[in-house]
Amino acid sequence: MILSDFFIEKKLARRKKVKEEAHEKMEEAKETGDLEEALKQKIRTVSITSKMKEDAKKMLALMGMPVIEVRNFFLFKYEAF
Image (cartoon, rainbow, N blue to C red):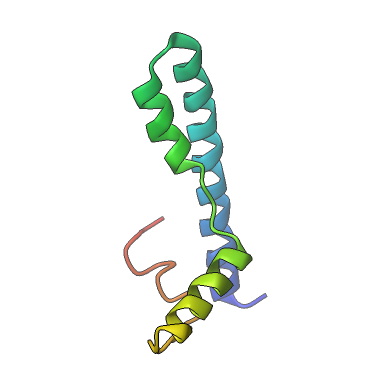
């Protein structure tokens, strides 16, 4: 395994944990009737699918905008372990 792959897996595991925690908080907020907090946590549980990415690229291409794909560029740029 390449070192960068190790860091990527670790980062993705952290993101998954954060989403799971947000889901738990969302359920708690729904039970207590705090809809504003439930919505805030719901937004944190959303994941972007491959289809969403492909649709966005297709839309940009149809508008004549260039699409540049960079593998894992932002994964570590702004967040530290």
